[in-house]
Every structure is written in structure tokens, then in C-alpha cells.
Picture 1 (cartoon, rainbow over the protein chains, first blue to last red):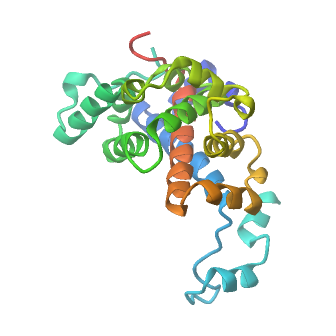
Picture 2: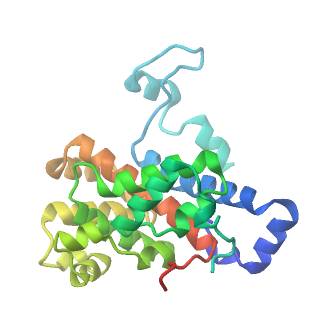
Picture 3: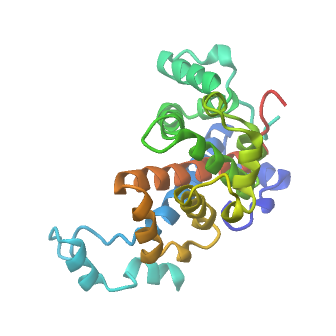
Amino acid sequence: MATDPDALDDAFFAELRRHYSDDEIVELGAFIGFNIGYHTFFGTLKFYPMFSPDGRLVSQEESARLYGAAPASLQAADD
Amino acid sequence: MARIAPVPLEAIDDPELAALLARGRTLGVPDALFPGLLARVPGYAKPLMRALIESHGSGNVDHKLKEIIRIQLARFAGDAYFASLRSEQARAAGLTEAEIEAGCGDYEDAPCFTEAEKCALRYADQMYLDASKLDPAFYEEMKRHYTEAQIMELGAFIAFHYGMQLFMRSLAAKPLAS
């Protein structure tokens, strides 16, 4: 949906229907669209986790020091 | 017709969803197709309809500017459904098709937009084209024109509408009136 929307053609939807009901496809599609939209937006805001790895509530400045410029979650996604 | 059929209007018996559907039809965005499709997932239908309508028709950023951004994004998403719909609220406030076209084209050189409006158009334009350009320097420029609350309003509006446009594109949806 995000990187190659043309690939979501009639054949793809026929395959989806082999596994999911129409209700479930609408649920998945709206969920995916919502997440594409918001993750990109939040990414531009440079949020850091509110909690340290040991569970303390920390400021954004301390969180940036703890997690660094490239949080582990993004590094894992890039690997 | 979309790849998936909406729930028939007469089968939507939840009064709150029916009221949201009516608000959308009055506003012009969305028509009955979007809530009809969402009605297949009762847990989603009302919150997503409410978010779509409130983020577009309410708030502290000019609705006409949001309408231009909405259409700019829908064209970028390749979504014929939302790109074809028009806000009656924006039309009543004086928004013209020429201004919409200017916003979807080379808005940087368009004399009809203020520097603040161009900045907001750039915000939407770059969000899914090259989000790396929305760096701290860009946000500082946004803050010269908008409050932080308005920036969050615009960003959340852009994110939500673009996401729903991708979803409707995937279903090959077209406006009911077309």
C-alpha cells in the first residue's frame, strides 16, 4: 500500500479473499492506511520513548541521550 | 464500484454512525461510500468517521487551506475517490477550483497563497515524498507562521487523510456520484 500501490490489483484482492472475509480486508486496509499516515508524521517529530529501558519516566532530552540518534527499534527495522 | 461493497445505507442502524454519515454528506466529504465500507468494521466506523470529519471541518487552521491540502494529498496518493470529492464548507467560504489547482501544482510561485499557506502546502507535499526535508529547520519555519497546536492539527490532518486515501485507492473506490 505504501511502496507499490499498483500491486494491489484485482488478482491480489482475489488472493486476499482466499484468506480473509471482506469485513476483515476492510479492517486490515483501514488499519494499514492509518499506520502509514501516522508513523511517517510521528517520524518527522523526532519523538523519543517516554520510558527508559528500565522503566523510568524520563524527559525527551534524557531519552535522546539514552536511545541515541537512531533508536534500536528503527535499527532493527532497517536490518 | 469499489472492490468491496459497502454496507447498504438502510442497514446502518447505529444512530451515531448515521448522524456522522449525514454530516459527511452535508459537508461533501466523504460521501456515503466511505462510512458504508467502514460499517463492515463496527469498532472502526465511528472513530474513523469522526476523525475524518472533525480533522477536516473543525479546528484552528483555515478550512479552505485544509481542503486544498486534502486534494493535493489525494492526487499524490492516486486516490480518485477523495480527489474527486469537494467540501461544500470550503466552496461556501469562497474556495475556487483555480485555487485548488494552484495548490496542487507549483504553489511556491502562486500569487494567491501567503508564505504561511505555502509553508503548510510544503508540509503536506513533503510528508510522503521526502519526509527527511521536514527537519528541525522546517519545523522552525512552520513555527514562524503557526502555533504548535496548529502544527499538530495540520500534521495529524495530513497523516490521517493520506492514510485513508491510500486505503480507498487500494479498493479502487470512486465517488458514488460519478
